[in-house]
Length: 194
Image (cartoon, rainbow, N blue to C red; front, side, top):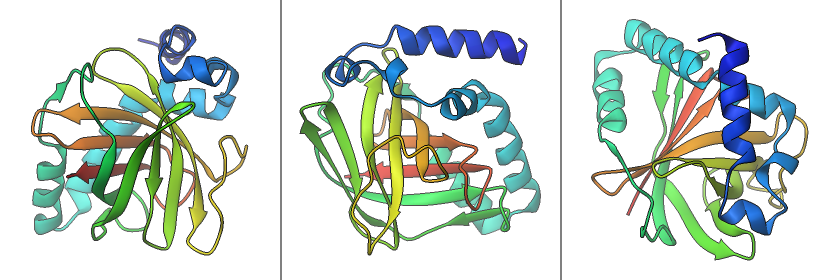
């Protein structure tokens, strides 16, 4: 499938999104062109970053990545994502081929605009909203900030903008996958567990 065809599919999916997006005027009015492009290239970016991480990462780090990537996506229907979570970030295909950081605290709450994620601890944080994108996938739109700053709204139209696909896994974990983040790597994974 060509990049143009993939972009068209993603844009149609975004335009047809329901749920929390309706409370904010629709995801199509929020998402930036750059973030649309990042989602359109998701599969290609993910495949390349994982290949580089497996080729250049340390064996123990690769084993940990395999654990993070384990699990099959399940339906979000009826799932209660609200509450406190532990979360950690894994960065692939950056200055380091593969690095996984320690666990931090995250929280998901119900806001007037739908489900809202906050990374509460660590020097680099992110906040943002989830939007429906089918039965087994959500889109996350957020903005990064540092611990000494107030959270930023999406979009910032700069390197602070964060976009990801989110998957609920059969073991209860939540995994956000960020294609082509602006800083430090080609692909990030945020793993959340209770």
